[in-house]
Image 1 (cartoon, rainbow, N blue to C red):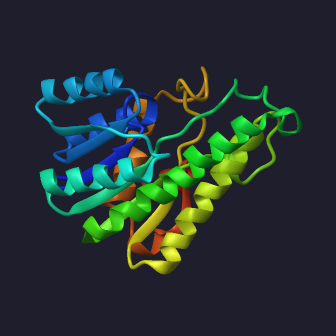
Image 2 (cartoon, rainbow, N blue to C red):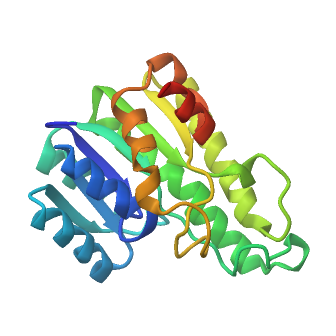
Length: 230
């Protein structure tokens, strides 16, 4: 990852934070964003204290103008963008306790706006600034593809995000994929599952090592990743 510029949304906590720290340690210049400026600064401090290179930008992926400026900052600070990880997401409620028939319209709308439209804005606004061999990555999970009780429109929004990834894979010349790291213990998903630090290799492999033919809008889950390491 030496000399590469990678933009990561939702990098103040959880998977985004762990991946940002890992990629910076591997030599990438990471450009990180979040709505939470204080937590974003904590992530940046961790990176710089370890000798990594980081640029921060408070941004809300629901606002395309925020995202447009984020990509402009990334290109100005690091040159052409080599990788984008659309990782920002929200979950209104506690996992397993939000059946879709009881969900509010406000929660439904914000899930779609953040987790679906936010991915669209992230990839769309990155396009003018990408290097020729750039890779676009969307974070998702099995709820996008399998029936799961009590996850409501969060599942709908993740299915939307995966469809957005397939669209960009079909309509642009770039390598695009969905990363499903399995159940990860984060503020969003709650306790249980892998530590975020245990899934960073999967993201790094997709950005730096995975064969291009495997990144055609496809889902790279833990099983696929482990198989590649044999």
